[in-house]
Image 1: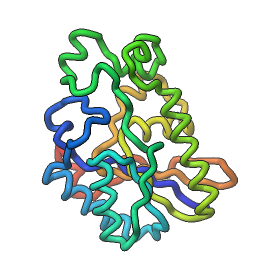
Image 2: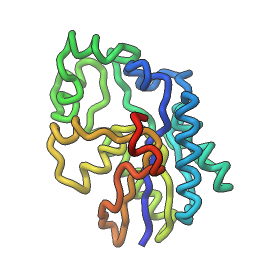
Image 3: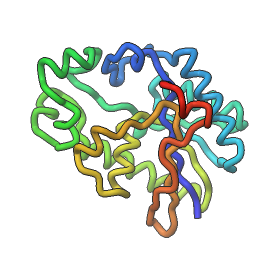
Image 4: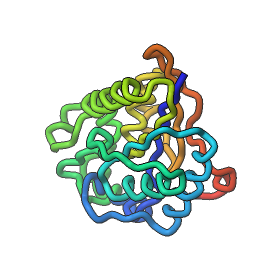
Length: 207
């Protein structure tokens, strides 16, 4: 039995500024984000990792590189782990989006047409690309533990294929920066074995 371990990138500049950066290039990890990534790298040291795949977006790629360096594993970039294409909302502050369009995240999880009409990738499409890389990883690394470094909504996409989550549940669920989300796989069947796993020192902090 192997584990697919989804790792969200460490805290990045867009997280602290509350801007929906999407696929905008040049959004780096903060100093805190780099510390988080290093702590997570140390956690993974004990988990017998065979491979690391990463989103090409800078904040995820840098997180993956920190983890890979600590564990002496090369990072493979895969576009299926990329952040959402946020269309017309790219680069806009959260508060401004909510004021002009309401709760776009609930609309995203509900699959409402307004999302696609604004050029935003649909949740259904995110689920398809995440399922695709997971299937490939299982074939390439049978019964091995593999890390996929990505963003919050691809992780939620994986969760929603295992657990029956409503749009409200998905919206309210926060995947913490640099947290591990673990899925056990056996004969193409998955079970959730950990969510928001991170260094114990972080559980009483706001980051």
